[in-house]
Length: 134
Image (cartoon, rainbow, N blue to C red; front, side, top):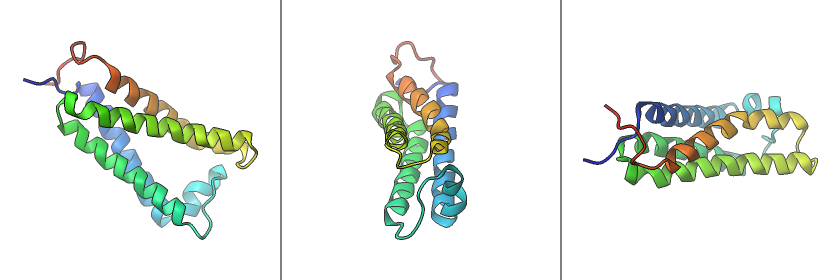
């Protein structure tokens, strides 16, 4: 029998997946309300923004799929999503430091830091030390 994700890890994966899907929907239908509060660009032409939020939603769906997979099969996907989230944080911070984005844009990536680190750590945990899910 293959090791499954622990209850806490599965909850983390589901929560992250659903948050990413929610951000995708809000980013597609109400980008000004979602991004302008933090000074993130959302103006037309917004092709890159739409592609980015669609990709973000696709990663959310991938996390929901990874929960159902055995740990050994889903861990690379979970680790990749964690790294993508942390990469997004680095891009926003670099743009803040280059004065391309306002300082409050850093608030927009707080959840990405938290969930990115948690996903990366969950994926990197040794399967033998991970508690099996009931």
